[in-house]
Amino acid sequence: MIEDPEVRRQLAKQGRLWGFSLICAAAGALTVQRTGSLGAAVVVFLVTVVVLGPLLWAYERRRRNRG
Image 1 (cartoon, rainbow, N blue to C red):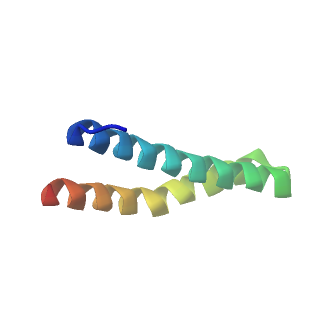
Image 2: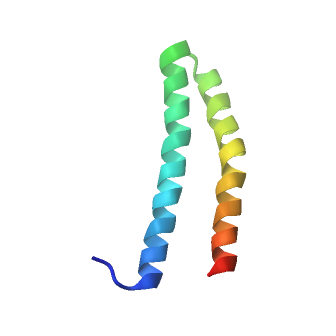
């Protein structure tokens, strides 16, 4: 168990970033599977980044200001 709060915060932040990237990549991969179009997958990936990116950024900013 990790007891250092700073290490714990950094690991949690890295986990959120990896989760974000997994969601974006999965959306693109699912689009390729369904449509067979790489161009459509790129568009879906970018739309996912544009929609979820600011949400994650705002969440991280709020956490930083709170702590």
